[in-house]
View: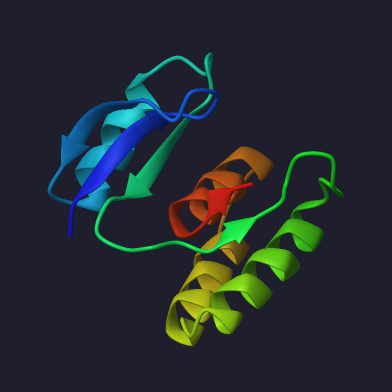
Length: 104
């Protein structure tokens, strides 16, 4: 799989990586502005509306999980939920969600 760091506002890819771990390490080195996301370049991701919707992480997870299941990606939905529940912060959980979806 290929992963990239993308600027959320413009969808511009800054750099590509062979593993999620390398991309996430680089992401942690970057400043928090503008907001960046690690994305999987190898798969079509379902689109989920986040802007203008309930920003509660549990609401975001529920909408994202439903979109993944609807796209036939039940294993990804479970993996995302497991990883998100292990997070220590909202931002960390949101970054995990962003790996699995495209923001609409």
